[in-house]
Every structure is written in C-alpha cells, then in structure tokens.
Length: 465
Image 1: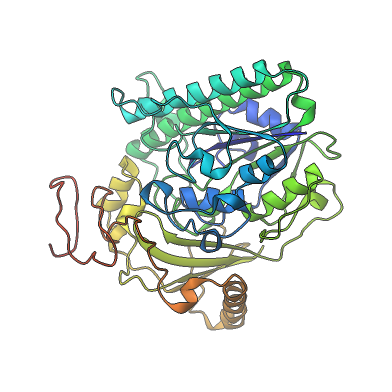
Image 2: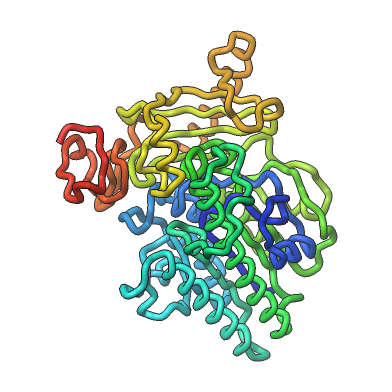
C-alpha cells in the first residue's frame, strides 16, 4: 500500500465535515468514504512543533522541535515518518509546504524527491497571492507525479502540504457576501472580523478543491484502492484565543482517514486522541513494526470498531512559538487543566497572535492587558468554551489535585524539561521578546530584556528600550 498525507495550516476543524458553514465537498466525500474524528488534538498548537510531534510520534520536548523550524529550531529527522518509510523501501515524496525543517532541506526528513521548484518563494508576488500560487503548484505537481507512475514502481509515501490557510489570506472579492459570514463563538461578530473570516473561508475552499484534484488523480492512476489517505491540520484557527493557546479552539484539529479494507466508513468517532497516536496507527494499518521511540497509541481498534476509547487523557504543550511561553495541559473527556510556567510575563503574548483585523479588535478592547492565570481548570461538559476557570473553586479542589497529578506524571514520564525550570532556547534559534507586538523584533534569548526596535512605527512594545 501507499500513504498519502494531506495537510494544511491553521484550520482546526473548520470543515463541512464538522458542521461548519464552509463548502468543502471533496473533504466531506473523503470523510464519508472513511472516518472523521471529532476529538483529535495536536500535541502543540503552533506550526512546527505540532507537525513534528505527529510525524515523529513524539512530544515536542522529546523530538527537539520545540519552536518554529524557520527560526532555527531543529528536529531529529531520523524519527520522521518519511525516514521510516524510506528505510522500508518506499519512494518518499513531498510537494508543497512542510514546516519541520527549513525550505530545501527536506532530505533531512527522509524525502527522496521534492517536487517544489527552486523558486518556490517568489519575491515579485505579495504573500496573500504567493501562498495560493504555491498551493496550486503543489497540487499540480502531485497530480503529475501520480499520473506518471507506472506498474512496478515502488510504493510511495507522499506528503502534500498547503499554505494559503495561513495568514496573509487571499483578498476578499468585492461581490462576496461578507455580511452573512458566521464568525466563531469566541469572537465578536462585527464587520472587521466577518471580513477576516470570509478571507479564511476562501482559503479553505481552495484547499478543498486542490485535495479533490489530488484524490481524483489517485483514482485515475488506479492507486486509490491501494492507498492510505489521511488529512489533518496543525492546530486551530489563527485568531485570538485559538492558535498558540491550549484551549480546545487551539488544540482541536480535523482528522480524516480512509484506507483499503476499512470495515467502518461514513461515520465519526468521538474517541479522545492525540496527533502522537497517528504514527503508530499508520504502522498498524500498513502491517509494519512500530519503532521504539513512539509515545502514542495505535487507534486501529477504534477504526475497526473493537474499542470506543484507547486514551484516558491527552497532553499538549507550548514552549516557543515566536516568543517563549511555557504552558502545559492535560485533557480528559470531562476536564481540562492548564498550567503556565514562569516566563516573567503575566499577559497574553501579543506576538503569538498573527497580525490581522481580529487581533486589532482584541487589542483595541484591552485583551493584552488581561493577566493570565497560573492554573486553569475547566469542566468541558458544562463549559465547552472554557470560559469559567474553576481552579479556585473549593468544590473542585479534588478535581484540581487529580488533574495536577495527571500532568505531573505525564511530565515525569516524558522527562519534560519544564520540571527543571526554564525550557532552554537551543543554540542558534531565534526568539522575540514575549511582550513584542509583532514578529519584526527578533533577538536571542536570554539577551532579550532590551533591544532596538528597528521597525519603528510597525512594532508596538511595552518594554523599556
């Protein structure tokens, strides 16, 4: 069998499959021909750490990718899924986005062929158009690869990654019905955010169309009935209180899978799962031995209908996104516990919210002046939006202690460096100060108490210069 891994940035579960008001017919058809998961969570709600965790089956603090790859954070490529399949004789191919190593270093992950041209990043095109151009090219190259395959070729592991669901979004056409766009419950419903959401919806429509093109080419090549296909994203939507947050709006991800011989299709599973469970599951589907570094559990028994659950809990973490923000969480079906380590900053890091109209709305109304709680506890059955922190409630003391214990045991079992204090910035990695407003300021930690704001008028900082 072959493996086709389809992925995109920043969409959480914002698909028609999950009931959201966006048309994604191709991914809906894939989910109907396979299975969709409603309770899959990433191991870290930030781009590189999330992808690295799923593709190694290890938590970020174990595989080394605790921050963004293009900012100098590195992963053990020998543990990557592409390396695993390459060692077993598969042709490993990538087309489009990956975020586990720097651009044009895909061979470090085990990819034999990269279908992206050398001029993948064009300087003559604004970013909002560049991402869509790259995605169109990624899909076209993947389709060409599939059409060129011949009988007797090695089985393939192919990753196709899309980027236009990452900011900056494409422009919204003048005739788009922005006034009738539904915004997420966590956001105010006003014209600025409706337009922001409209742009995101256009991006999701594009990804769906391109995934449809690739699956159609797979069928035309006669490989559909011989291929494991899974689709996912890295984390939640790039809006305040979502991406780079350990609330469910940040860690909840779409996950669709279809493979030859599936006994259960056109259904959903509510099983509590983590991205680190994907690698061992793919191994079991393929009938391959699981490598000894995996930290997740196979959910093949859930796919087969033998079990309803395999996990009592899932864990997620933040270390570095653009700045240092050490946060951990444990989630069961009913409760979520979030713990914040010390980063000498008590407020939401502005730099961890992508620049956007939505960010400006939150800035205008004082979001960045609201102090973070050291501990948070939520009853997810009664408070699915995680807005009523129960950590200080006497009647929840026993629950709080139980969830603290769950987190401590997970940290000890995985040798979480946060137990020893600060999670150190790796040599050569770049980081912003935590209270930077935007990503233009890059300084090396720990020398970050003072810096020169070279982009005056763009950055808005609250530290002394």
